[in-house]
Structure formats: structure tokens, C-alpha cells
Length: 595
Image (cartoon, rainbow, N blue to C red; front, side, top):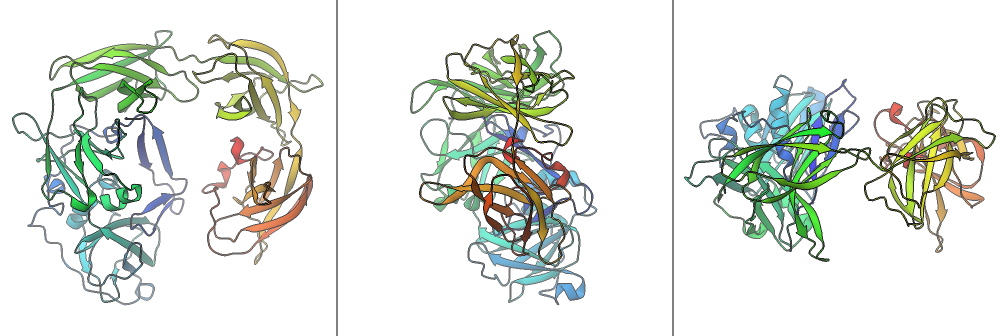
């Protein structure tokens, strides 16, 4: 069944060197660094709708069904493998077979310098658009030599598309590079064209690909038709879908319809001709969202349109989202909705707000535009209290968070907790909060004076009101210092910011593993203070940082201070800390798990 899975990827270039594109064996550039924000949320439906201007006509050349643009386009061809790039000041492109690493001689390579091209053009095709059409039209064509390499002009903002019979790949980069490797995968493309009952091509129609399993599974990929032919090309499906395994896949419309026709296909026998789908009768639904006070809802949120469907395992009715739109300026519009449907609407504003879910009447006739006003009671069950120490001192002007434990099992974490000048705070809970459950709430606060955090456990097995339930004074205790010290580079002695320090304890078999909540990142000066509780008197400390080998120290006594951990340079590790050191948790926090 369709689930709420929508994703938006926003690429924002900041100062040079603060974000970059790295190359992996897939041949598709990966993105990391603080200049990139990935936002998830919404429904299945069609993330491609968000940020798309339905009135913006796309260049027909980009949507040719051959994917390579008009036949008349003939980019100039560069010469074969050149001299060493680092010596010539150019960049060496190495073309290889993804998975084996084997060089591919004679591959056609198209290179585009994106420095002076409109950023919006590239964002429209990367990573899920027709990169092939764009790069082959805008760029220069080269031919890889016998060693699978070719030299292209140096740029800090480039894109590549490479192909050889039966294989293709693309990548992009930002930053100064001497060598770029591009892996090619077997070419498996699927072309879908959408027409109306009269055979007229239709643009901006969301098309999804999902697994061929019982129920209504969520689309793995969703894209919009465009161009004069009303077509969409799904490129590189072999790389995307093969890892998911059998039993095959379906292509279908990805918006609310009374009946969703699913056309099956197999990667091993892809249709050579475009799949032509006829658009059923649809209308438009627009929403105006107000709060419980009748004021326009001007916060961030998502509107999800779907239906109630039985769970294929339990038979229980569940909300299945077919389409998701971002709420902007208290409004959201669904440009494609099937007519005469029993629809459900869900509004979600994140953990701080209570979700809305209710039936809604959609369009009845083809082409009808309906407008609906929704009053959203955004209040959530709330506990109010005052944070104090055992001596009665109030804990004012602090920030922190909380985690819910149901019957001893860790559940969800709540939104940020703040205290006012005299220590008053609020804990806002999810919609499914119910009484009669053995529920404990562990909440923590960070003092502003640089001392360690304080925490408290609240028994919350009672009914909590939307208007707020007052529990009076809550006594917090100082979290004990577990470990403190610095992390340095062995060769230079430099202090290392953004090093990830964690505590590990053995299990019953003697194998060591991390302890939830007992981890922290070093600050800009390479210093850390880790506060927490453990019954063990000794433990092992593991430190990770990109560009260094893991460092281990054991045994370490509980409460040890001023340790000096030394790291040796080597291959990159899988440290979870990346980007700006200023983004680290404050000194004295309970660890990265508490953020």
C-alpha cells in the first residue's frame, strides 16, 4: 500500500570548500557536507510535484524518447586520452565498469562545465532527471583511450555522462579535482508516455514505479511527464532496482485514483517501445488551512491525500497516502485528483504539532476545481511542570529534550524542551499518547554555565490533556561526568574537532558494542566532556574521525578526566559527525544520541 514517503533534496552552494560532491562506485555522485539539506516527509505520492512549476514548459529536446536530444545536435568531439592531468592542469576522467572496477576503453564521454550555466537548469535534471540529454546537448564529447581515461579542461563545477554499448553512467562534482572516476552500469531505461482520451500528450502527470507485491506498495521512484510528447524517462533502473531483488515491478499513476492500474515489467525484459498510459478523469483540489483559533496556518507542514485501505496482513484499515504537497502560506494544491473518490486528508506539522486526519470531498466531475477550508486543531497532549534541583533552585533558561519509555521499552523522542526564567517547561506528546500504560519520561536540560546536564524521570501513566496537565515541581539531578579529555593527531599533535567519542561495553558473549546515549563529539578545540550513567566501573573508549584510523583505549575507569587520545592518519572511518564543528552538541551534553 502507499505509505507516506516523499523526499525533497535541496542543494545549496555556500562558501567554496564548505560542501562537495564525492564519487562512489555507483558512478552517481553522492552529496555530503553542511551545504546540503535533505528533507523527508509527506506521502508516497509524488515528491516530484513539490518545487515544480506546472506552467514552465520544458525544452522538447530534453524529452526526446531517444534520450539523447535531437539528431541534429552534434557536440564537437575532443581528442582521446591526454597527458597526465596534474601535469597539464586538466582533469583526468577514468571510466570503469561499476562492480568490477575494470577500465572501459573507447567509452564516449560528455563533459559540461557548469560554472556559467544557470543553476536551476542543473537542479532540474540532477540526480533524477534526464542527465544524458542535458550533458550531451550542453557539453563537449570525448573518447576514452585504451586505458579508459580521457583528459578534460579543469573546472571546479563539472558534470559528466559516459556510455558504451549497453552501459552508461553520470556524475558531478564541485571543488578542485585532479581525477574523477565514473562507473558505468548496464543501461536499463523505461519510457512512459501519458495521453488523454483523445490521444493528446499530457505533462506534469506523476508516474511511479513500485514493487510487484500484494496491496498498494509505495512508489520507489516518482517522476513527472514533460515535453511535447508528455513522456518521462526512468534512467538507470538496473542500478536502482536490482538491489531490491524479485518479484518484479509495476509502473502506474502516482496520485489518488478510484482504481490504480499497475502495468508490470521485468528488468530482464524491458519494453523497447514507450508504455502509453491513458489519463483517467481528474480534477484539482486546493486547501486553505486554518488553526483552531481561525487564523491562517503559517507554519511548515505537509498535506497528504489518500484513502483508508486494509492492511494486507492484519486487515485493519490504515491511511495510505497517494500524494503529498507542502503547505505554504496556509495553502496547498493537488493538481491531479481522481473524481468521485472517498478521500482522506492528513495534515502533519512535525513532532511539535498534533496531526489532522479526516474524510474530505474531492472533485466530482472531470476538470472540476474544488476549494476546501480546513480547521486544524494543532494542540498536542501536554505536561507542564517546573524544573528544580533538590535544594529548590530553579533551572531557568535551559534547553534540552525528552524520550518516552513504554513498559520499559524506549519509544519516540519529543521536540525540544525549554525552560523560562523560573524553570517552567512543557512536554508535548504524540497523538497516540494514552493512559494506563507503564510510561516513563526521561527528560534532560543543558545548563548555560558549561556544567554537565541535568535529568529527571517522570512517571506519566495518566491521561494528558490537550489543554495541558500540570505536574508541579520536577526535581532534576546532575548527570555524572563519565569521561573527559582531548583528541589529537599523532603526527602533528594538533587537536582534532569533530572526532566522535563513544563508550563501549561487552555483552554476554564478551563482544563489545556501543551504549545508547554514551557518545559525544569533540568541540572546535578538540575537547570533550561525556556525561552519563553506567553500572560498569570500567569500559572501552572508541574514537572515530574522517581521515584517521579508529583509536581505542581500554580499560578506562568511570569518571576519568583529562585523557589524551591520539589518532593516526589513514583511510576514512564511518564517523557519524560531518560538516561544521559549530553544529556539535554543546559541551557537557549527554552525547549525540540526546540531540
